[in-house]
Length: 87
Image (cartoon, helix red, strand yellow):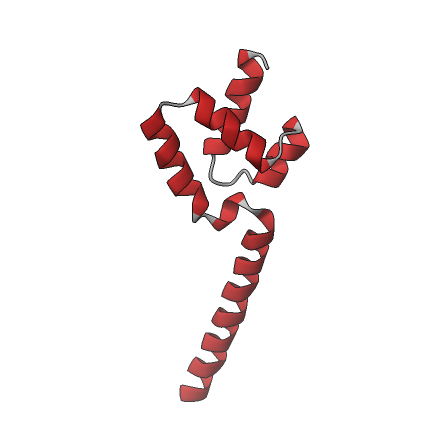
């Protein structure tokens, strides 16, 4: 793995809106491989900070992101309907 490729993977992994699915499509690396690249390339503290950040982030996992968006839409529709009933 050359430095330019590794830097591209690291940049995409740090970006909030780039999902692991998109990283796979562009680089061929699955999530576990991206984690290995990050572990080897970053300082220990930086790696821990990155893992903590992406572990709870639904935007890094396309399926979870879509599910969360649907839930938000359902909730906001219900809230809107309830609010109209009150008025």
